Length: 158
Image (cartoon, rainbow, N blue to C red; front, side, top):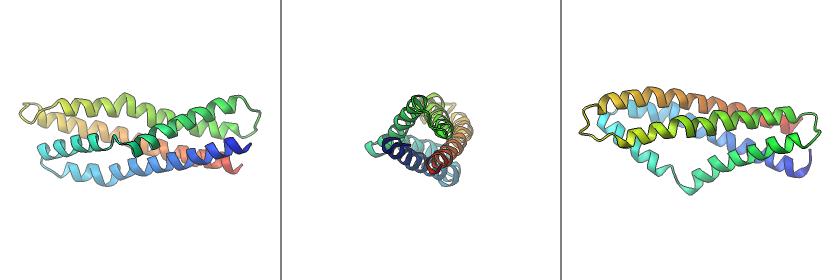
């Protein structure tokens, strides 16, 4: 493995591991805490979190890791490295299980929640639906990001 690919692999391990930690924090603390709040308060707090999390540091980590993973997949197909399959598997799992799931599921759920006003007669049902669906898909992101980190680390170690 050349130095450039090794550096990208280390960055992908760090990025996917950090993202696994972010998603894990939501799984184990943030969402359970919001579930215990009155529904209007939980909705308002989650809407605030969804606005605050879109910041340069988070976006660099989340999208930067996706870009690095995409580059690793392309570079693996251009090389004859014997252990490139581990790198491709880890990168693909991050791309699909973290990045695509976020774009296809979690962000649309966030947008729908933001559209529900407190006076909306379906506000409580919308919050209940949001909690169950968003949390289930966040579990997918957590496991995917952690699995990606492990596979990418294995690729770097071999």
